[in-house]
Image 1 (cartoon, rainbow, N blue to C red):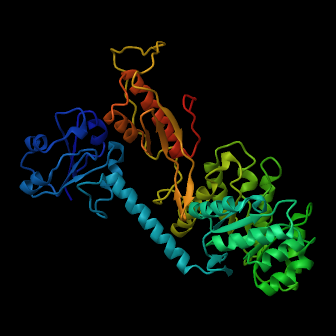
Image 2 (cartoon, helix red, strand yellow; image 1 turned 135 degrees about the vertical axis):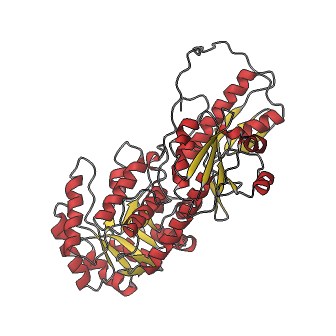
Image 3 (cartoon, one colour; image 1 turned 180 degrees about the vertical axis):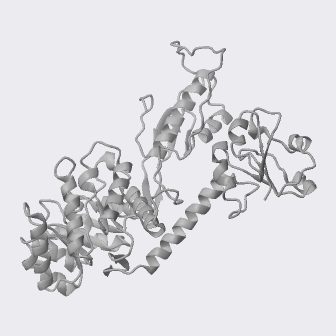
Length: 492
């Protein structure tokens, strides 16, 4: 296939790196590649024939008439020249678009392919047992369990909203944490309400036998935290209900007591067992505890394992996304089956979704027998796969200086904030930017859309105010994208 890649002077050096026997490069008489027009392209073409002409992805002009005249497909390439190699190597597998930049098209196709593959992986997987309709263990994918901490202490509306929110974020199982002072009536009410609300399996997290039996009676699918203190009291209740139990070791005697507790539970009729060898916090035997998982798996190949990611994520003042991804990879290596997070602290917000994506990445990685990269799904929030080149500082320039003078805009001021997310009729209403002016309030997700509306309504009359408003709105938009809080005029 003979390909002609069209670009401008500024991107020419980068684009020429992809020139080959089958790929020619045409540099037009314009600095900015996005300013390519049909007339400009037509004037620069010679009599050579090509199978396809690739124009810059940011071009907005209509090339359909020229395409008809030339009888050559003219399609959008990537937005940035650095992505051209990826596009050229995919030409035999995809059909480029006249309206969607190639980089976006490729990303969408790869993501759709990944999601489809994941469904097939799970459909074909063998499992140790079912938790409702959810496959646990075996060759099935790792599942994410999210704990609602102190669920028994929450009001009804807050509990319902938390459950719905966790489901939307991707939780496969929701764990109801029982407060230290909770009684039977509180557990009964919490489980009954959760059962009416949740569409995913429910578990209860308590060591107290009477609270465990109450939760079972009102419909939980799983019990967390069985050890020698409660197994003999509740095991037969669990066995009769045919529900799942997570067995943990006794304090100070991790692996031996875990194995002993599993044998006891089995002897009392509990058939659906998940083992928790306990993932210890960072700096407190973490590496040895990971080795404990390996030891357990070598001895018990068929028992699913519980991997308490939150024991590490919640106990490090580090951005959660990288920790969760790495711990998921470690969990995959030790053949864990359930990734557990309480998503409790503010710094750990987003952990459910991060673990869900990480689990999908590791499932794809195992399926392809390759590292978890170039999968069509990723957790790159701040870093980038392909770095756009920097510009050189020109010879002639003016050094920027801060202007300390400030006068209020006669047209009025704005208060910028972010709305809280809410669940309405089972659908998440996500955070949005709020721009409040004395004449009206504007709501949106995009800094540009809000600023355009402000200008259209004539709500601003000074250039410095427009510049300030643009900066603050962009900070608010970034806060939305990163799941951060925002406060006007604070450093971001």
